[in-house]
Length: 354
Ligand code: TXA
Ligand code: MG
Image (tube, rainbow, N blue to C red; front, side, top):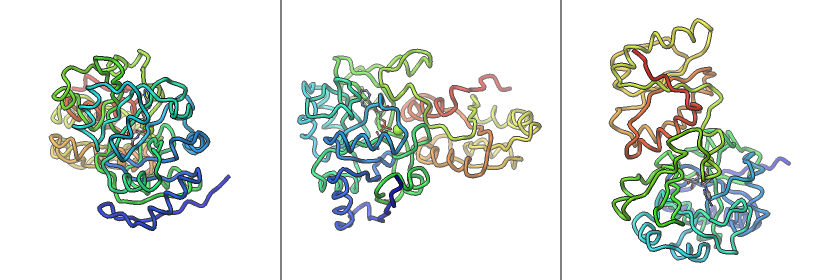
C-alpha cells in the first residue's frame, strides 16, 4: 500500500513543536516516522507496539531476525526496558549518553519480540540530537529505530537519502539537516563481565576502555567467516549498487598505482567512481572517471566518516559500475569506518598494489 510521505523541516537546535506533535501522533497511532540522530537518520515506530514495529521490517525489506535498537530520552528509562543492568553499563550510560553508544542488556518482558527478534536481550541507546529527543519525549514511548535506509543500502545521512529509499513506504520524515557523525552507534554487549563490541561505531574502543577497562571485539569483526553474535552483522550491508573495491596502501602508493588499477575496468567499458583523500588527489592530477570525490585530509577521519555513505550513494546516482576507494588504520573511528567499508566492498581489497 502506498502512503503519501510527509516531510517537515525542523530546526535541530529548537525543534518546531507543532511538527514534533504531529510526528508523535503518528508514532502513537502505530505509524512510521524517520528522524535525524547524531549518527544517521532512523526510522521510528512505537517500540512497545509489536504491530507498529513489524511495519519497520516491511518498509525497509529488513530480515525479521535482525533486532532493533530502542531509543530513549531519559537514562532511567533503560531500567524499565532492561534488567540486571551492570555497574559497567551504568558507568557507560553516565559517560556516553546521550551519544552514539548502544548497550545490549537482558530484556524485560515489556519489550515486544518484534524488537528483540526473539532474543533475550534488548539494545538501548539515548541519541544526542534535539529532534530525536523531542520526538521520543512527545511520543512518550521508546522508539524502535533502525537506520532509515532500504535494507542492505548505505545508511541515510540526510532526509533526501531517506526519501530516495522509503518515499511512499513511511508516513513522515522530520528533516533536521544532515546527521552528524555519519556512521552508526557502537553496539556493545554488556551482559557479560567482559563487554563485547558487536559493531564498532561513534564511541571508540579506546574511549570505552578508558571508562571501564578491557572490552573485546566480537571475533566476527576480525574474521569475515566466523558467525557474528549481532544478527544484523551477517547480512550484506552498506552496499551501493556499484561494486566497491578497496585499495590498501599509503596515499603515495595508491596515487602511483591508480591509473594501472583503473585500466582493466576502463577497457571493459566500466564507469569508475573514485573516492580518495586529498593526499591521493594531490599526486595523481585529473583522472578519467565518471565520478571523482576528494574526501578531505587522510588525517581527518571525522570528515571522511561524515561523507562516506553519501558519496557511495552519489556514485550510484552517477551511474558508476565500480567504486575504488582507500583503506584506513583500524584505530579510533577508523575501526568503524573500515568495518563499514569492508562490508560495502564484500571484503574485496586489493592488498598489494605497487
Ligand atoms: O546509530 C545507530 O545505531 C542508528 C540510529 C538510527 O540510532 N541505528 C542503527 O540501527 O544503526 P540498525 O538497526 O541499522 O542497526 C542495529 C544493530 C544491528 O546490527 C542489530 O543486529 C544490532 O544493532 N542489535 C540490535 N539489537 C540487538 C540485540 N539484542 N543483540 C545483539 N545485537 C543487536
Ligand atoms: Mg542499519
